[in-house]
Length: 215
Image (cartoon, rainbow, N blue to C red; front, side, top):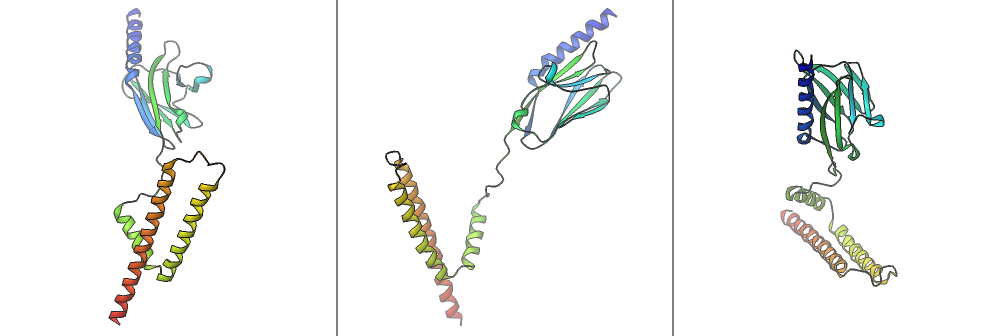
């Protein structure tokens, strides 16, 4: 009996020593499943955030399956005495990052720890612009816009740009605080808009001349 207890404590120590190398990664808003392995079976299961103390205990059960909100665990026997506790966490958020502990047994508990690293989800609202998508979008805009509309757009852009720059110059909140790079950025933005508009007008006029030549 003493030999068995010594072996059990030795195996538990080995599990705690390997915990530092266990890192599971998930993405914000997603789900994750992690398996905690044990060399012996037990009647009671725990899932804890950090150490299994008081409010850190997320799940405590004697059943093979249990759930508490976004957390759930399932006990699966994988061998004569070996077993796995599968931990599932849904709808991950950044605050879920940290150490977790699976615990099996109550008299002589076994532990298996893992670290959960939740990364920020990519911003899917930003358009994924490529040269092909930009060209297709621009050509579609050209085909649906007339020369008159382009000329009106040019006038409005010129007026809007002048008004914006004038507001930055006269705004009392920005006097003495405006970065020179701001003027450079605004000038470049206006230049790009004017060049795009000029290209739009040129293409429209070219299309009109081609249509007249064909007729």
